[in-house]
Image (tube, rainbow, N blue to C red; front, side, top):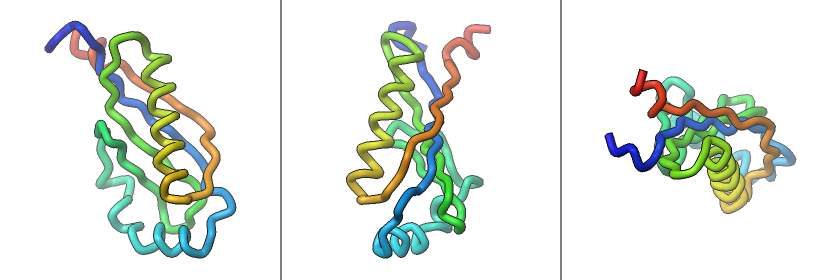
Length: 106
């Protein structure tokens, strides 16, 4: 593995807020594709939620040169942009991460 960067698995958690009827129909139509059991950490992010449409997770694999804080900030910004682009009302509540490069060094 190249030591010039670290690989982080970042989870952005949030809550759906003020969903429009259109956004609700969109999320409901793809709920089966966004099940927690079929999710993965990916560079583009993987959205998971259940049929109640209350809470969600976005999982990212971030390859960052600087720090864990930078990886978390990047994932938070990506999540906000993604949901805003889809016109899905949301609030981001928590970001957690794990440095996978450290795990492989042990």
